[in-house]
Image (cartoon, rainbow, N blue to C red; front, side, top):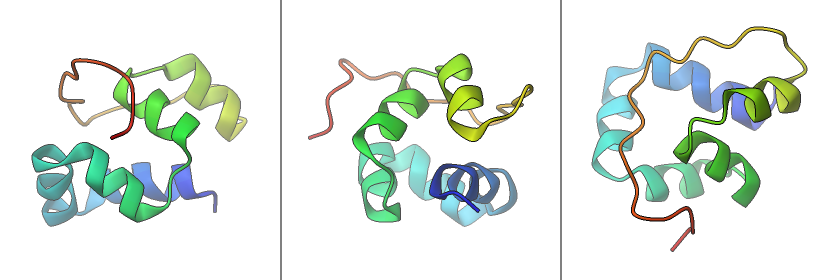
Length: 74
């Protein structure tokens, strides 16, 4: 399983992980091992980019992506 798919699955299934993500999205994504490009796709809710990266036709995002002032990883 790709890291991105694993991350998205965990967000949907693990409420403690999701709470950690909501509190510190950049830190959680970085600690999980997502690439800069994957982090940017998640931060900007780039559904087309996520679908292309995962090689799927449909992606269901059921987690609110907190707004960010920019799309740079700190």
